[in-house]
Length: 152
Length: 332
Image 1 (cartoon, rainbow over the protein chains, first blue to last red):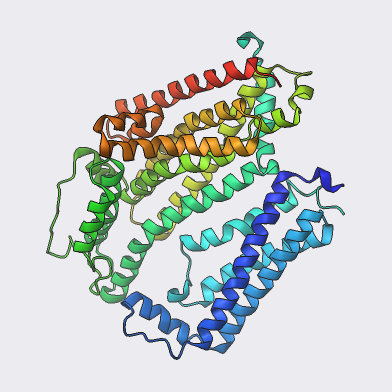
Image 2 (image 1 turned 135 degrees about the horizontal axis):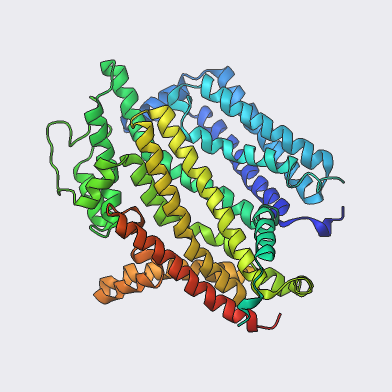
């Protein structure tokens, strides 16, 4: 299928992928900086909820930090690559990687809900549903509406 | 006018195709994401303090105190109602909130009004009482915010009903098989169908979550009020979609159509709200669109609700007719 026939929805999906991917890379930087300076941040001025959240971050431990970092990195890379795939209408780069991103994002949302303490966004709340919107929409659209558009 | 050329089978075909095509064309996808994220975020903002209070009470007392929880919900809902009903300005609400600082963050898990201090600033009027005490208050507050916010999002769905095809001259091919009236009304109907489905997804998600997770309200009351809210939201979108149809039929560029739709929908509201500060009668500008009376869709008197719904359809019919009148005569 030629690129002239790319549906507008696929272009929109690619743009949203790039935005979320950029967001992910920025949050990686923020996460790294936060952990680098966590010991020197004064907490006296913080209010109770913020202090609890801060303490939860501080006590999170290296394995959980590595898990969050790796997950964000993988999701951001997959979003970027699949976004390029959508634009070029590639089967592997677009459809396969897009599906892998969606599945990883859904699984990680569920796992984070179970693993993380509530101060770090753990547990199931309506925020978890918001986090699931984009992966679920991606999964549905790639396998229905845009199934025949990613064939190159 | 060639309304006699309207064919039900053509309109049905065009509207169903258009509602499915909306996601593929991009406008539906963007609207779907914006509406879902906006709707659920509003719900999250309102439900979160209540959930925190419930978990704090369970942790500290081993059980929940429904009276305190209800009072907290009323404390959350009251400023929203006061602002949206024009009873108070944002500044006044902000000042009151500052005065009651520390409210939801109290260590003992009580809300400021419930904790004996009971400094109720104003008695609730019958409409607010209905929304906050006779109906599931959290759902009422969420619906009011959605009624206020969703008209801003709808232009993302409705802006390109015909303008893109006018620009590319693609409509000429369609006109070999059907009439302009069928295309215009069919696409309008398709947009309404898509918007209604999105509203249903949002309302069902929020209601299901409230019912299963917070368990504050009885299922029957929650379901009935959710259905009412869904109808209110779906009906409210109809005149705003008609505005988008009118603009889309009047300009050749989809981007310009989107900008104009945003300017008209938000402009009427801003002109009404800001204008009345300088000259009181300027508030009547709000009645150029449903902004001035759309909250009546959640009124405690069924007659007022019905009147508001009829008003939505009358506005939509008039605006749609204007758009069709222009579309029928314009060069494609």
